[in-house]
Image 1 (cartoon, helix red, strand yellow):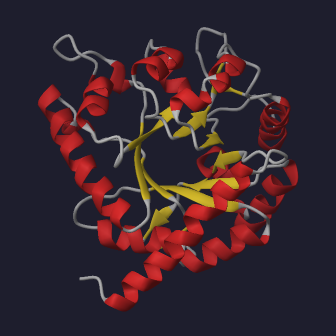
Image 2 (image 1 turned 180 degrees about the horizontal axis):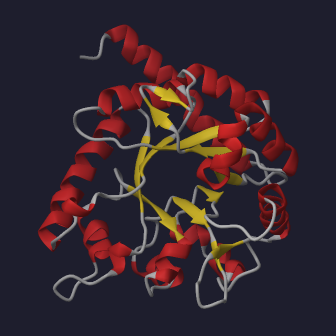
Amino acid sequence: MQTRRTFIKIASTATLAMSLPLNILASPRKKLIGIQLYTIREKIKEDFTGTLKQIAKIGYNSVEAAGYSDRKFYGYSPKEYKDICESFGLAPTSSHTSVNSENVDQVIEDTLEGGMSYVIIPSLPRDKRQTLDDYKKLADEFNLLGEKCSKNGLGFGYHNHAFEFDKLDGEIPYDILLLNTDSKLVTMELDMYWMVYGGQEPLDYFDKFPGRFGLWHVKDMDADPARESTEIGSGIIDWPKIFAASEKAGMKMYYVEQESFKMDQFESITKSCDYLKNLKY
């Protein structure tokens, strides 16, 4: 049960968390360029603080966590994680977290204390996505989790892969999630690479479901047959057109993500950051 003291603590933290990225976005001179820390997971394991310092030096100013467990982020308490990130000028704006009805209260408290604005479900276990009814049940669950998060000043969303675009009974499961979730409670963190990999086009979804894609994973696709992820601007995804439609999509912030590399990881994410710095939108 949430005590009055806990509520006040969470509410005040939520105000700070929600204002930080919006303040950055409000500045016409400074883009919010984020990175999903899963991208450099090996570097993170070797030297957490040194890696954050390096990505800040490269030019990133926002991070999305992918290391929450035992009520800690990468082994640090939420406040420690927040303080470390901010010491390097990095806004800790989001977290990939396995949240459910049983742990939602502690996830909300930890995510807010960590200075973040969003908690994102990163994927779905196979046994929970076998039928269209499964997806409708998931949509109901997302609405409940989103309502809980919203009441505490935290955004809630879902991150896609490619399996959501494999048709079930002639319908696209991703569409079922969009049609059955409340746009005020649930946002989609759209992974561009996986949508394209699944045979769909982001611009078509922006037209069909405007305003639903508050967060993006900016991940490019190599032109080779393996279709591996690559540096932003080096692949086949048309980023100028996609970013030109960011307002229609409802994008609030985005994170570079890459899963495979053909060059040094820091060199790679520097190339992606430089491309985004120069991209006009």
